[in-house]
Length: 126
Image 1 (cartoon, rainbow, N blue to C red):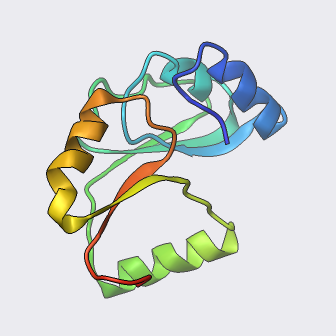
Image 2: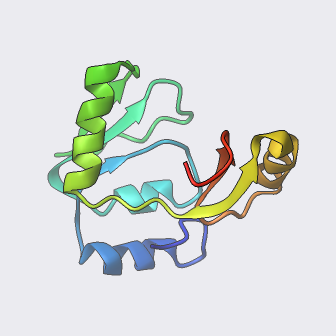
């Protein structure tokens, strides 16, 4: 894991990816985004949802794919299979009960979170 907002984000990513990246999913812009995308190998792919501003810059020999998200049972099943196959790990920075959603949102607004914030809807572990 690396902090994409850190001063050495591109170098961290280069080491983590061992030089080149096959594909990237861009969900938000950032100061280091273009430098990170420069690590995508020739014939690689960069996907991003319509509405990301600014859009990633076009590159020679890199396929850019803009898309509109479509959600449904089959899409979520495919996403789950892909996450399992790639052993995707999403760090959780904090968990708040639903009653503290405003506190969780305030934490997001402060920024500098490494990981995601989750809301617990039910009591217990589920």
